[in-house]
Image 1 (cartoon, rainbow over the protein chains, first blue to last red):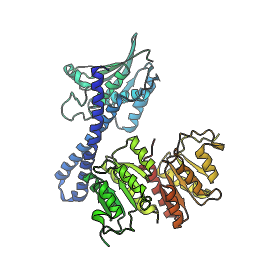
Image 2 (cartoon, helix red, strand yellow; image 1 turned 120 degrees about the vertical axis):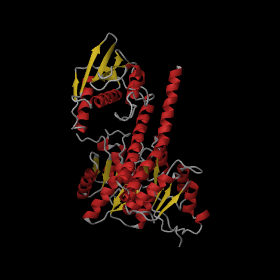
Image 3 (cartoon, rainbow over the protein chains, first blue to last red; image 1 turned 90 degrees about the vertical axis):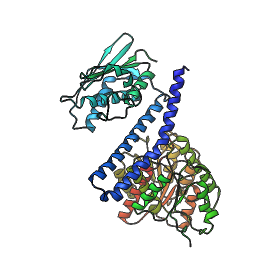
Image 4 (tube, one colour; image 1 turned 90 degrees about the horizontal axis):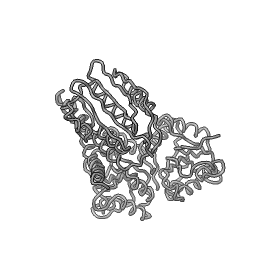
Length: 232
Length: 147
Length: 147
């Protein structure tokens, strides 16, 4: 095992135990805040109720982060299947599911034909879910939000790309994009678990591939992942 | 007659906040008024056996169900189950494990030891309240306990 | 060709109309739980043992819940409970007895054999619906079984 393998293993076990230990106090914060709302809500004015609602929603956000950590912590050692995955079908399924749960969204998502590749069906689905979620989130503030998905075939690998027409980011921060809990945009303009792209990176690396981003401020971003041909 | 008689539910839980939320959920749904809270396995066994601080408890009255956490100091949940199952008098008291752990080995071992049910505590408080309500409803009003 | 795969609930009861009624109530509270009705102990035992008409069933596949009426002709319903709880492979499967018998002796014997819960079937339509719904909510929604 290389040093980075050892570090990765330690990080996974740390993530697992921390998420386990954090759940109890988070449950208490949510539970007791709701109890306060139920029993004393009438005695609070609008501002008081608003403050309490913020406590609850932030606690629920921690819960989401914990879920992300748990998923992330399992990624390293779950056994991976190796089957032919029809990426066009998979990406379209993910998009359709999103459309069903967000009927009011006006993001236009275009998917070109995508070549199939060997890999783990469930994990690759997660990659599409996270990339598409990320792209739609960033383009959502535009007047005509648009996400484009296409692929290009290279001699030893296939590169899949997801482009959004959102605010983009400064390439100086591109390293941080796929890090854990890193956000390259300040504030809570784009709320999220912060782990989505770290999970994408981990899954793609387990497939022997690579991820990267290309963007410019004000010009949207393209997130790409490459998977090697001839696996397994 | 002491305050420890006619207890319907024995809640064995080392986390004070979880215990409070569970008892609150049971009260809210008007499911149980007589819930005894034991902070760990030792206190739980003393209660059931009418020993220690519970000497004066009526030996012939048992709760309708024991809600049992697994990870506790002094004596953990699995040991409590073993102790209760080893004694002819307490063997048949229904036990429902209520724990944060959804580790497969805890589930398997608990059932192997003979628990009646196993519940992983939901984090979302609405789901938690609902789970406690369903548990209370079934074990207090639907189930028939042994004589 | 009957499909006996993916059965989550095994309902053992000689009363066809009760079986149909229970299936409907369960289906209403939890979408998608596959239920199999065995009309006597022999059919139930064959199902569990993957024998006779159920030869092709995978023995590793166990139901999430068995609802069992003990008042059944030879072999008696007790034999199903005994077989389930006596065999290491099937011991963890939750067995909930649902029967008309309110005899203390029957209740006691079932718990002695390791039953997870014992329910006396109420005669009223509304109460019976509520009882089955509560069974569904706890045993299929809240309770966790080993994988």
